[in-house]
Amino acid sequence: MLPFRHVLVATDFSTNAAPAVDLAVEIARGSDAALTLVHVADVAAYAYSSVSMAGVDLLTPMLDAAQGELAKALAAVHTRLPDAKAMLRQGVAADELVQAARVAGADLVVVGTHGRTGMAHLVVGSVAEKVVRNAPVPVLTVRSGPRGS
Image (cartoon, rainbow, N blue to C red):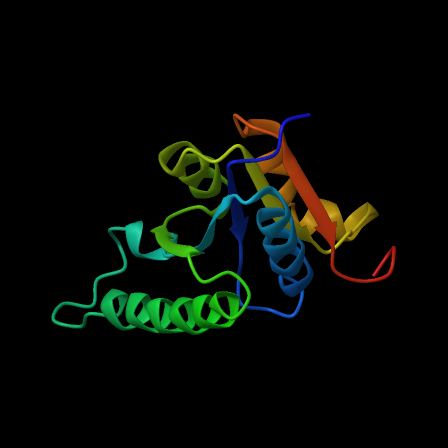
């Protein structure tokens, strides 16, 4: 297989995302590939028209906070991969990650997964699983903890 040219890695800034980011950085370094770190701000609750808080802007502070966390995460990646870039998207995480892969021209997507099974998987769902099903390129899932946790 040819080396990857552009790796896209998702982060939610949690410790569960760290192994995926670390692996994506190593893959990008080993392939001399570009890397884009992506965070999706899920602000779907504001789409409901019945939620009216006239004069109160809650969206801007949320996006500003997400941008600040993304800048910190990118700074940490820059210590190992100085040319890495970051992308902040807004919407449903799985859909936005798939779209980000297209926009960035990525040829590999790396996402962390909790590795939930059974009822926990059914209740919580899986962003990683949805990305695997819908991404236009290969997706590498990285488990964050021991199996079944």
